[in-house]
Image 1: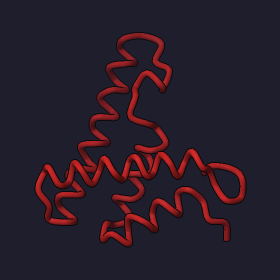
Image 2 (image 1 turned 180 degrees about the horizontal axis):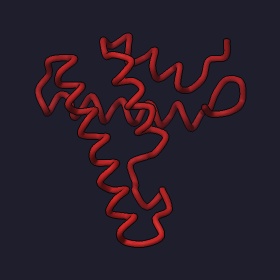
Image 3 (image 1 turned 30 degrees about the vertical axis):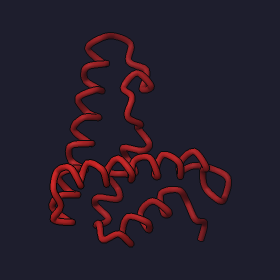
Image 4 (image 1 turned 90 degrees about the horizontal axis):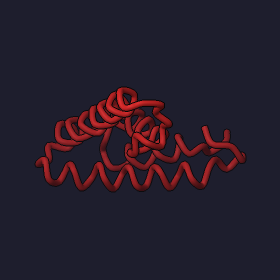
Amino acid sequence: MADSAKDRILERIMEEGHTDSYGTLLYLVAVMGVDPMALGPTNSVELTTWSGHLDGLKGSLLCLAMYERKSTPQKAAETVYRHIVEAAADLRHGDSAGSAE
């Protein structure tokens, strides 16, 4: 079975004690990115909507991190930031089979 970027992301965060729900949400954030402009909004309404979606996804990750690891908001924010950076790097490197999932 190919080792996809998604598989690597899920495996790494589950080793840290997070659930696959957190990992799947993290993967979605990494795929979408953190910059709403990168999603190609065609007007200010779309930009605002994408900004809200991305903020909501990041907020959900923070809540899950605090709940799953019983951590403070500051510690959860540091963890989520690190996870997003690592997941984005995994996606940039792509799958070992040659295509990103």
